[in-house]
Length: 250
Image 1 (cartoon, one colour):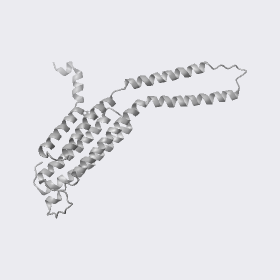
Image 2: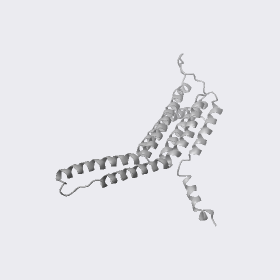
Image 3: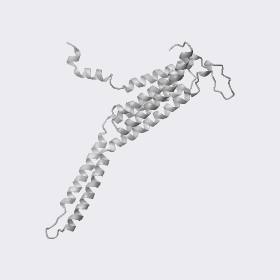
């Protein structure tokens, strides 16, 4: 008999492997990319950038796992505070005593206004407490996404001076011109590595939206993905210029 018929949970796990990003696989991919960069460009600054991206990926895995799990301590604290506030409110109401002769229309208006104010304040306090966990997680996610946005710009800085035009035409160099030491093939590989790093940066951002469906975080993740896609498109324009003008390996 087929094992999946006996173990339906295994089938669910297998299917989910191809529907969600695996943080550990992403880390392994970045680590492998770092080795590839070091083997081909051992002295390039891109090595250090990739190492920093790997460190961010490892930190992000811990952060994303913490964000995806319910925080029991915060939830218990919130429930305790709400129960205590409700008890105090009920106790306060129980201490009120009115007689029909003493209770006037003015007293009714005064008590109603005070009660409405208390209910509004209590509702705002309860809403603040209920959303406390989400706001703490949101703050951590946005801080991590800001780091990913920053490293995307750092990667872009490393490809700015990698201009293929000097290989297509005879360019007159000036004293301030950047050093051009890469062959056409090496330049293609360098740009390709930059594109891969940008793509992986976008994937690290997507991990935060995978299990945390907060609208603010989703918007920030989309911004990082749009940024990395746009920067990668610029890199690929350079790669396509090189491939069109010369017969270079893929």
